[in-house]
Image (cartoon, rainbow, N blue to C red):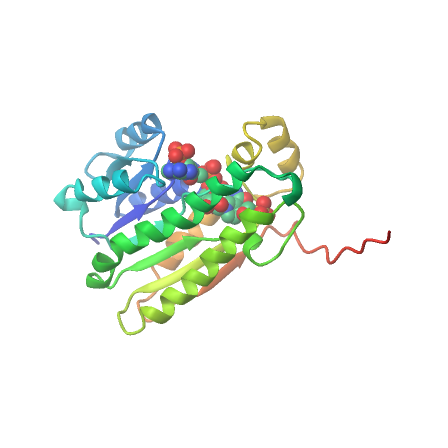
Length: 249
Ligand code: NDP
Ligand code: 8X3
């Protein structure tokens, strides 16, 4: 086992939990995020021979390319890209949502994801590697206030399926994991720092954990090479569908 994973958004939530699982199973991980202090702590915990900390904002294309160019040779042969860095901003209806929030989600969840994928595709093809994108149930099912966030995750789903098509015959696997409710820092970020709102959402709901999703990422990455899970939609048992709404004026 001498495989390397490039995991974006490894300072928190799914990306952090996945980094720990991959390293525990003998992988090397390039862990990315903006919070350098967290990445340094993680490198100290897991070992600099196992974890390379790449500290950049995924929306900064020049910084992204510089981080890739600066990879030490022992981390440069990438077998797996986990496009996990992402966020929701706001829960307001479209008519009162912040355009800045929408642009942040599009820049992070779409533009950065395709930019990084484009940069790493040659290596992934050479290594017959894999791409695991983190979509969301919000990309398939609309809900009030989901507007642009759901739109970005619908893009991730369709882009993932399109990559499958284009990578036909290369041996590269592509999966879109589409989680429902999981307790991470996601809702604190979405509410611009409202920990009480986050606690209220998750309390008593028995949501998924970061580890639940990280285990799925690892499982998919280590399936026999002739298998490809195209999409994995996964929810806590406590979450389901609510149907259509009708307005009577
Ligand atoms: P967290 O907020 O806990 O983690 C998000 C990660 O993304 C952090 O490591 C953060 O790092 C990174 N990130 C965000 N913006 C940037 C940026 N501009 N540049 C670099 N890194 C960035 O949330 P989750 O773990 O829950 O979210 C991970 C993914 O899962 C996201 O794509 C989210 O949309 C998706 N998702 C989450 C669900 C949930 O219920 N939690 C359900 C379905 C999908 P840093 O801030 O240090 O830069
Ligand atoms: C996050 C899940 O249901 O909050 O992608 O949109 S949800």
